[in-house]
Image (cartoon, rainbow, N blue to C red; front, side, top):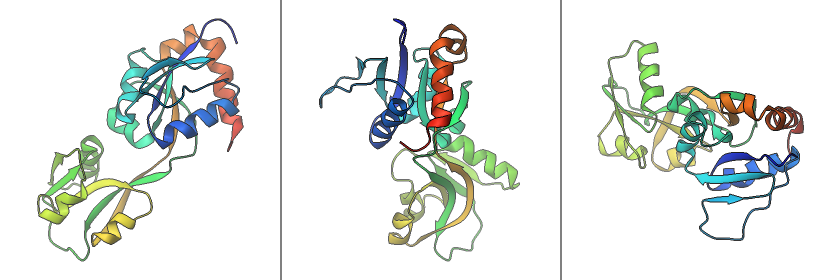
Length: 205
């Protein structure tokens, strides 16, 4: 590697560990600090910024980070202008329309952490439902009568079964994506292009 380093925006939590494993398999030598509260640190071949996954597209689009890892669901909701060269294939889930089991009435209101994606779905189905944004446990909107349906992430479906909810439609399938700032692709192309090629060819670590 050259003296120039990449700055990577990585989401906290389990995706962070899988992201680092993929980046190491692609050739980056990364050493994470012992448990602590550091949010930005030199990890060897890259400087890592840890953040919420919803912030990754903003940091990459605005050039604070050269690249990052984020779910396709978050990327579509953020609607940021970033280059998306690699589907890393992990953190798979689906974004679905969910209702109480057996519900048959009209859908007049949909709650979601993904209002942009939900509104696009409503328009595509020519529905007249209002979309409201929530930040917490979206399933509660159905259970309390706040909304007739919700659009939310489904991984195993266990939460739906435990709360007598059912998945009626899948809006999109999601997985972790490696995203790149478009200007950085030119300015740090000698670092980013080999990394992108290696990530494409690395597969499962």
